[in-house]
Every structure is written in C-alpha cells, then in structure tokens.
Image 1: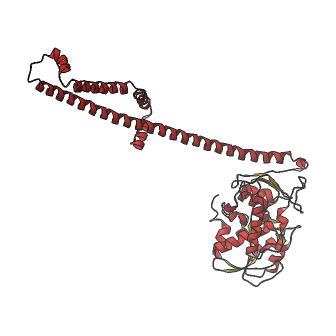
Image 2 (image 1 turned 30 degrees about the horizontal axis):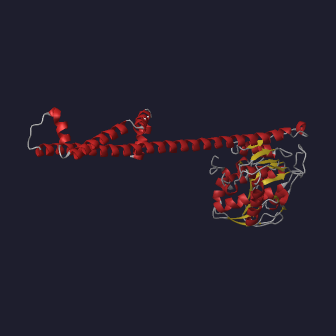
Image 3 (image 1 turned 180 degrees about the vertical axis):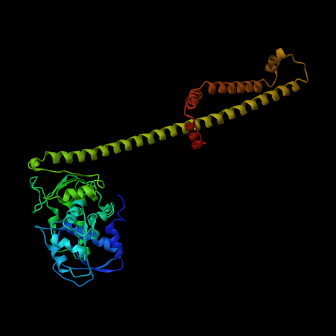
Length: 426
C-alpha cells in the first residue's frame, strides 16, 4: 500500500505530539470499536496524551477530538452533532474521518472551531456544497486504513467455508434475503463502550478470531469487510442503504485489497443470490488455481532434486569405479614388471649355472627344460601366463567396457555439468 505518512490527517496528528486531548470515541457496534482501537493505536504512535469520555459528557479541554465513523448522518444519527454543538465554545474540535450527510448548521462550525476530516470524496463534496470552510475540511481515509497491511498477520489462516455477515439493522439495503446461517457479527457489542483501549483491542481481536476460521466473507458491513480484507479473506462486499460502502470501497479499498470485490446491487437483484454465489465461487476458484500451481511447482522442484541426487550418485559411482580400476591396473603393472625382472634374473642365473656354455637362441627353451631348475622356471612361466591372462581379462571385462561407455556418455554432458561434478567428487 502507498504510504499515508504524508496524508493531511497524519500531519494533523503529528502536530498534537506531546499534547493532551479530550477524546470522544463514537458509540456504536463492534465496527466502531475497531475504529476506536485504530485511533488509540495512532495516539500511541504519535505520542498523543488523551482522556476518553462518554457521548453525553462535556469538557473544558482546549482540544476536543471526536472519533471517526458514520454518525453525522442527518435523520439517522445525532450523537456526534450534539457533541460538536456542546463544545462549540472550546478552542478546537477535530472530527476524525467521517461520512457526513446533511447537518448544514453543524458544518457551519468549520468557520468557528470545527475541523472535519472526510473518509470518502462524496461526503467531502457534500460538505463543501453545504458551505463548509475549505481550509478546515479535508479528504482522508477511515481511521482503520492507517493500520499496516500486516497488522493482523498473527491471525492469517486460510480457513474454510463462507461467513454470511449481513446487516440486520436500519442500514441494511435489503437487497438479499437474510438466511438462517447469517450472523451480524458487528452487533456482538453495540453501545457507548469504547472508552477503554484494552477493551477495544480485545473486541476487535475477538471479531478477527471469528472471521479467521472462514475462507470467504459476504457482508454489507463496512468494517467487517475491512477487517476480513486485512485477514486476507476472499471478500464480497455489498452496499448499505446509502452511498457509504461504495464510496469508501472506491476511495480506499479497491486498489489496496485485491482479495475484495464490491457488488453494486440494485432492486433487480433483490431476490437473486446467484451473482453473489458466482462471485464467491470465482474467488474460491482463483485461490484453488494458485494453490494447484504452487503444488505443481513444489512437485517439479522435488523431481529436480531427485534427478540431481540420482545423477550425483551415478557420477560418484563412476568416479569410484575409475579409481578402483586404476589401482588394479597399477598393481597388475607392478606385478608384470616384477615377473619380467625375475624371469631375466632366472635366465641369467641358469646361464651362469651352465658354466658359460654357449646356448643358441633357438634351443634355449629345450636347455632350460633339461636343467635341474626346470620346475622353478616352469613356475615362472606360469606366473607370466597368469599375469598376461589377468591383463586380458580386465581389458575384455564388462567393467572395462562399462567404464568406456560411461566415459562416452559423460563426454556428451554439458561442459558446466562436467565441471560441477568434477569439483564435487574430486
């Protein structure tokens, strides 16, 4: 994800480093608890001291910060509007990234002490159309998006099956029927509960732990979509009953979470769930394709390793056979030389014993046979015959022929392979 360190919202938080603020976390469901958790994380990161308050309290602190979310919606929610109005005489009010509809008289406070951050461009444009001070109105992202992509990495798990987590409250678009297997997970908590940072952490962790066991998620809850995307689930996100979900998806989620798909449902799809099932199937098929490809790569890698090991083994056997053969050849050569020396010595000795008689070359064998040392000379001849026989045997043996073939085969191997194995088995 592209760094948000130079985002206007982050730059504003940096100006509060070392200062104390009064913080009003937005009341609401567990999704609002997730927002509060992300906010406390940023306060700690940028060294911002704070005291948290309930929605109906009033403080005299110079800086009042109101938690982000979707509460400044005229005709639906009024908690945030009341907090702003009660503190209109304080030095400074900062509304963290919000979706805003209506409340023109509240927006007019941007000309007084109110600074507003919008979490998507639709609210930003509506606020400006309603007369907001441009210098104190900013476009940013939902606070949860300022967490790192790997923030929940300890909970990464493939999971199985589909989690249906559709809204059952007033923001439901009612474009798809709520089945018996649906669980509106965000309503596990709902109220003014988010003043305690540890509770916000554990509430967020409990939702993440529940989502963790599934492979895919179908929901129209914004923060279930965000948390599921952080957990790398296959997410099918649907609209709520106004523009919030789609605007935030286009602004902050589309480019960042490739595992998330938004379905812009309409009334014609009210009773048709096939498109949703098809989208879930596509996510599953893509995941399975990647898995199959990885398994094939792993298999081919093992085949390559086995082939390399087999080739190395055969080359080692060849080198070993060559060494043994060379040792035998050297041994037989020494034996042959020794036999020749003995033969010459015996011949010289026999001549001496004959008293220097002149012996013609042609009848030397006959004379040798008639000498008293005939047995000894015959034994020597047999030794020579055995030596010659052994040499004939080795040069005509299967081993010698096999080594010749191996040498021929080895000569056809690529040069870099021959060099590699010579170095390995030298």
